[in-house]
Image (cartoon, rainbow, N blue to C red; front, side, top):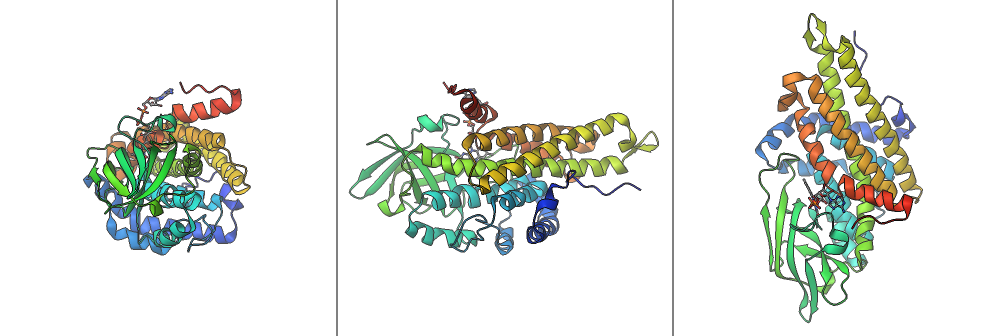
Length: 391
Ligand code: FAD
């Protein structure tokens, strides 16, 4: 009789309060019963399952860490655990929530005026309004800090935005997108709430992705797009303010990677226990066990690192370099874990129905978004050496 699969090898989750543990298990049950059975179909067809939005809203975890505006005011640690639970079942749905709850709501929570928070956060918490976050451009990905080419100019009628934004998750159907643009007057990066009905706003779906296929990414074109002063994020006055949002969401991506790796590991271990070759379960072979132990070692290191990262966040001590190091380490190790998970499953490892192939593909996008390995490494490198090596 094989022992039960327990990927929480060092019992890290035992440190959660009974209430948090109950919430985690409620989310896990929901994801296993409502989301897991449908994701492969949507992933294959490159479509988003809109019918799950009210069910996600009922979980009441959107905007989990924010105080007020209908949000739970919970801990960053629990927010991370939630991201991992979503990642464990499907990194695309985890990303949808990460964009809504972290990037879009986070921009308003950290940089918005009181009126903007009142208008958007309660409805976004209930997923009645969907948000997106537009920073990356077709020609500017890693270099957004100094290189944004999307411009904004103040006129008597309001702000006029011009430029393009690429890869913007949720933007094909979102009610609004936070657009980051450089002010032609003072050269600083400013943030805007751009509503889908704003004149001059157009979005086209990016097709042909081989990762995170459920997430709908858009190419946004802003042509003399008019935005009223009341929709400018009053607390976003330079890229430093954008970076505050990214610090928080990079921690969330580290946790999402923990979940993605865990999902792949658990499915692979279960498979090796029941798959027989040469008359024995393949889990009984030394070379397979070596893969499983490598996977579990990395997963455990990621999980304990992410746990401490969130504790720092809850203590108010999180720095950019902490979030960047965790994002790099967890997404890099995830790539190794999902690849070994596929390997121990032989040919079935590339079939969607065995629930590892999707993680294998999705890990590639998680590895590159919210700052590549190189860019996050340079953030850590700058903090430990004092030298900025970006250019
Ligand atoms: P590039 O910047 O062109 O980089 C290419 C390579 O060069 C990388 O390996 C990079 O690390 C390396 N490189 C660049 N500069 C240096 C340097 N100085 N030193 C060493 N190496 C360097 N963006 C949004 O704004 N909103 C979203 O919702 C969003 N969602 C996304 C979803 C998906 C599925 C994907 C794939 C991307 C998403 N992005 C989003 C964009 C994402 O953040 C960028 O892809 C990422 O920042 C990298 O930019 P790039 O793809 O343009 O690569």
